Figure (spheres, rainbow, N blue to C red):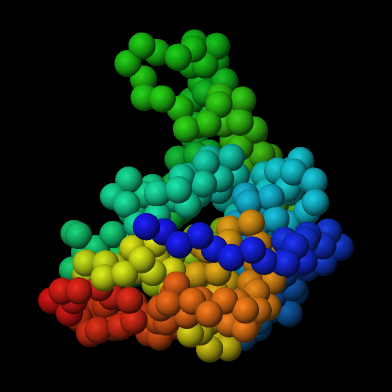
Length: 327
């Protein structure tokens, strides 16, 4: 039986709109402007720095998007949705669809029906080459295919009335047709705006090579590494912490810069208290250590993101790997 989490102070749930706006704007500006600045500096090292910065701050934007999905960025729900829609389109994703999938993930985490299983299920990806190829494919831009497919939907009659009518044998929608249209219109409009602005301020090549490419390679890789290492369970669960994927990622400063910005490596706290602002999970973790005598039994530690993935690839044990692993 799941143990009910203890009551926590309301301060950990309190949103701070000004702080959230500062984070959203500053990280989005870095992603949008790095390539433009590199173009005008026009040195090899400027291009490298821009590529890496866009990849890293793109991942930070993903975490901010995640906060908006939980209505944790701003006090008002509508503001979370509006910013979330724009931020998702900025990253080449869809907010309402992603939010529905993520909410399902929280209710089904650890089950075969978890929609995020495609990121961390290792049934067909044993240690060695197969799991390595999975990571390499994402690093080489396999996510770009999904972006292109989404944009093509806009031009293939998605808005025609006959496409809006539900067909008898069609699978049920995850979200409404209206929200799908909002997602796709925002995606197309924001990407078109980014293309025009970046092209006018630098070159169309900058849009492709220093905006789309780092987001679809580095950012995609960082997000996959985060999701995989926070949820993978190659063995059989031996406790509730493993079953519910409550893992504290012992991440160093490099991983916190590239993968788990805003203390997201306290991922177990988010699964215990999904209505707590991510910016405050570290403080809540420390509060729980002092006030909940059973807290340390509710999670397990893992050796960081790269460490966890690396140990799985090489078939070595790691925290919370479950019974029966290594193979």
